[in-house]
Length: 532
Image (cartoon, rainbow, N blue to C red; front, side, top):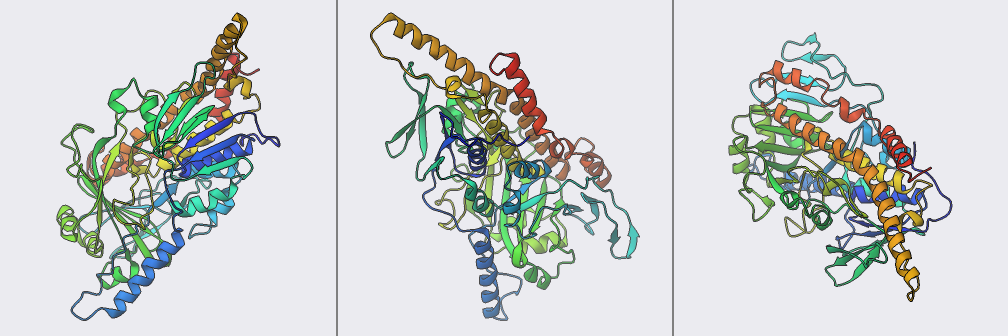
């Protein structure tokens, strides 16, 4: 069920606060339906593409390696303060990109040049690094005896195609689908407040740091974990207006396959992502283009409930740390993970903050939340956090299932489908004041206002009915996945226990029928008398 396509523009406008992946996907869907869109993005400049970032790191690594003296270990590759921040799109998100007609161009921006069922391997972080689990059905050779054996495989389907790419590359592809006659993009526009307009219009007014305002029929907030739109929507849920520390931190960095081989690593890292599982910790490595490896090492405090205390680095959610701190934190890991961490010269530490507890609703009046604004995530970094070249990125919800970006894309697709439905018109969404001077005028305004609130709220309520339970379920499942990786799953910490807990963990995420959700929304709107 692709988003409806309209040849003529609609007679209402939607303001999208946040020009990240979720906001742009929503804008694309609305454009397809002929809905006019105003995008307000806080960023002041266009970010460099992923290919230039990888090429820059790779070339600087080779230059410094060539200049290194014999007294400098060859595996200590030069650090580069631009981190390659990847987005993982599961089969559920890949299907939506296909529905929207953008998949081919997005796929062309990946290093693999298309979606595939690439393997994701889970190794023990200790001992001989036993291969515990893999998500692709295949035979593997066990080391060191070279005896053919079968490890526990995730029963992936042939259609379970995934994409992994840099956030900048994804945006590069998506923005080309924005219709210039329907979309107005405004940069350096950070929303600081949202208020209801006059009672005669039923609209809302956005206020920005530069003193300007914008009045909108519908406001969609996709402005991240520090969302001011969320504060408006969750005004009655004080405990979730501000982000909470998740008790989890991530150390990030880059290295090269050449550096790892020089360091003596035995595990092959260049073909597939690997999760090294530990006790209260796990390390993930992703191969990128040009022989670059992205490294993310997670550590979780299981002694305190989520949100019960502030981050130890509460003054700065992202900061540079020493290599010594990383090695000390992950000292219980075996030889190969230690070699990987020693190849990061200048790592950074990210304190992961979340929206906790979960929101009970994503909607207030004609204001709606999607993506990062409603779920757990690492904070979108600002230029002040690390360097002027650091691309902004946020992992929607805890990142252990690689499902956060997909949930934001699901949000955007459902919302675009409902707002872009042929029966969604200005008469359902907007109240226009009539001329003053009579009691009929006042009564008409009241009737129109009630009419607006009923229909606008009903359409957004339909979105709320399907997206709140779905998103909160995936957020909880992502937390469960992290617990399993770090030895705190329901079955325990042994390899067999982790295998049992990982069984089918992705199924309800990957195989959810998003079009059935939309059909249920439409049936409910017909039942409520909003649609016919």
